Length: 123
Image (cartoon, rainbow, N blue to C red):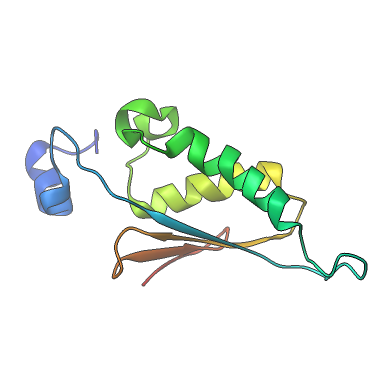
């Protein structure tokens, strides 16, 4: 965090406080909800959802240094919680109103953040 000293960053972020950065292979799960269309039998066409996820998640984030390559994270600390908010906000712009239910970001198998728009749940 740019607002903290080197000592404060080390104390708060531990081994993740590497001046040269560090990487993760995040797994993202997006859940939508709504009424099932009687004709298609779907809440949303999965092909459309995949295209929106490509635009909202993969294009801005895949193989990127979040702190250096993604403008959003130049002022926001690139925690998994903030990554979930970023993904939520990007998807909200593309999906039909009210259909997005939750975004799960798995940093590791044990570290998972669930974001539902107004609350963040850390598992």
